[in-house]
Length: 398
Image 1: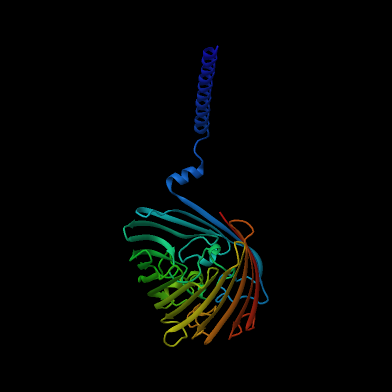
Image 2: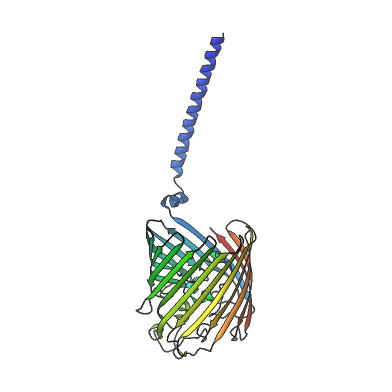
């Protein structure tokens, strides 16, 4: 009886094992069949091809008690308005070795501000588009790419304030040319390049602009970046949005606008004072030859300081203060250089202080509230020396 029971139990056990194996095989076959039927997703294709796609939305309301001066508030030129400032998209494949590339498209209100000379569209801007080749310590890119200068960037989701600094409007946004980066170490890079100049897809003259850059992270918490540009530029203070200014009686303004050597030196120093507090210092110096109505070189210089405090994952606070010294009035006069024989109004110093509160209720989303105060030695804000600005902004990153 015992032997009989043992045989029966063994048979039942084998039957269960066979049954489970058949069920597992059927399940595997069904899953394979379902996977083959559905096919790979778009995300799977991008992952397998190592293509990275990301972007952001930037919508805001910005209001002020005076009319902003377009030569000082380069991005927020409207008095009181809602706007989709930026819809940004990045598509890239940037391997550490071999060929790659990046395409960065910006649509919205800011596209016309950052649009380069020679670009046909004002509502959609190809902000960056370049091919990259990397080999060992060297990386070469050719096409259109962002400037080395400045503490802020075009991508508004990467900045800490709603409004842009005065200094950010007084440097180039992008360049079209070629750039070589050499990694001296994991922490230090040397950069050299040649391009058309400040914000020019199509060059406005036959000369080229040379760029030099140095960046180094001295410690885990401290870094320094220095960049310099030198080349012949037409004597408008902001190439990207004033080249198309009409000159009465002149069919092609860019052929008669005087040009001369423009030099820019930019420095950005950043350090983490504590785990939550970051300090950034940005300084600029610019000189321009052959500015109408200015004896000698027109020059301006400025400094901006940032304090960013991260309370926790949800709340943060950013404070910015800056001053721009425009020695001839060339950089802060919206009419300077707009026609042959124009005369700058004289020296002008402009200052601003901005406080921004960031609130991130969920991942990839931030709501910002900001107050800003501007002061100018000359009455450039609706015949006033002072202007206050209030802004609310929503950022969504995907």
